[in-house]
Length: 262
Length: 245
Ligand code: HEM
Ligand code: SF4
Ligand code: FES
Image (tube, rainbow over all chains, first blue to last red; front, side, top):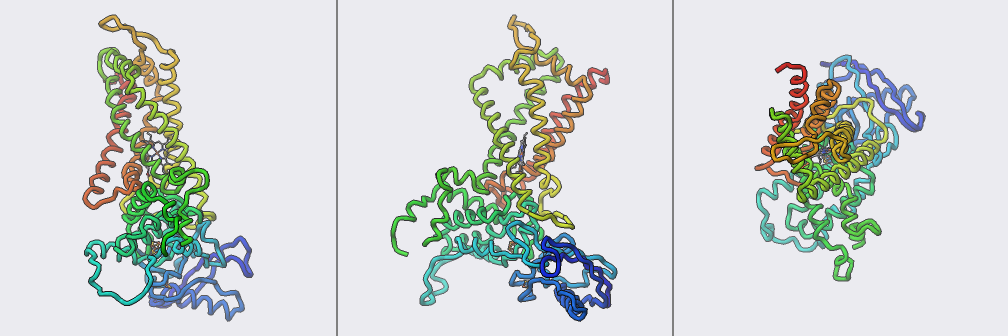
């Protein structure tokens, strides 16, 4: 329907609002069903600015579902109630005239709120820094078929690589666990020949960093997969568990410390 | 390659301690102890079914006598007690840690799940607490009284005098309060295992297109049939004492 009237219950924190945060309810008219959720927030912010009020801080970048920036929890669902989409891909046609929509930031101790709906997700960057890479120097591009990769591994790896690092899995998990994210990163590298080389070190290092960041433990609830905008499967978590358990038992860290090239 | 030093275990614990205190290692301990308890329950149930035999407790008491005097079974029981203790302590610690990882709670709280029961999965701590209280009561009521010798004696065919656990059980289940406590606890086990059975396999990394559907189906059948089998005993004994059948 054109020109919906909405009640937006939005979390405001910092700036003119209290340090510990509070909900503020805004009324918004003339919301078109063709708008994305972020465009709707843009309209709200323009209205707030004309009224000389502080606009709602929220994160966005690509607005096409690939960067993973647009974090917020809409009516209890990270990235909104639709499956397999990000907030920027959520359209207002999924709401009804007169709806009250509750918008909160991702909640996790390891994702502190910066302001309003903006949270700090540097914990994910530190997990990637701990091992989410392959140590290969770039050089001449080699023949594409030089290293054979099976269709199954390529597909499974690519499915895992679809993770955009948005953090919705943490936001959705009742334990605020980061296992789906870490398992996607570990899987997408471990399934390919180039990534297999460092698979054991990687699993140990990334899980260690994940634990240091204070995320919860996995209870296999699968809320992460249900809310993940890229529909990353919890099968990756089983793979991470396998990788980690085998690495813990067979990988000797001491050998790594002793010299060598690199 | 400084990132490699990140993989070193926490100081003083060694690599195995590092593994056990990692988020995955903690869950591996939960899964292994949980699966051990799962493997014990059907055996416990088969023995208990002797209680329903109409021989004034002879077969049950002789079975109990055998179970408490066989060396191998004793060793297995101690492993079992240790598993319960480890599983309960680790479970309570995980529950606390997981509850605090959120920080501030959501105003609107909904939990979706894929292929698991979110209601059971998010209540493992509460269900486990009910089970812990039940296990303590159960062991105090029968196991401890038997260990302390606070049970009557009975003599059977070959003149052997054994501890009589059958009659204390019959007395307990003639009391409707105990019947309700036991049946409710079995419902709690059913929900705990509805999630826990398949969860343990996932924790151990055993998720495979060929086997996981079977594991999930087996888990559902197990978590209904085994607790139901246990629950029949107090209900049957109570009905018997009331002359219902
Ligand atoms: C008959 C007794 C019990 C059996 C057979 C059993 C079995 C299991 C199994 C198989 C799991 C899944 C492990 C995994 O996800 O890897 C589990 C999880 C759990 N159990 Fe038990 N359990 C029993 C008693 C208890 C008790 C007494 C407690 C606590 C006081 C408890 C607390 C928990 C908790 C909190 C979890 C969830 C752990 C997590 O996923 O974070 N359980 N149990
Ligand atoms: S696994 Fe899914 S929810 Fe988690 S960070 Fe990656 S894309 Fe986002
Ligand atoms: S803004 Fe990039 S995914 Fe939404």
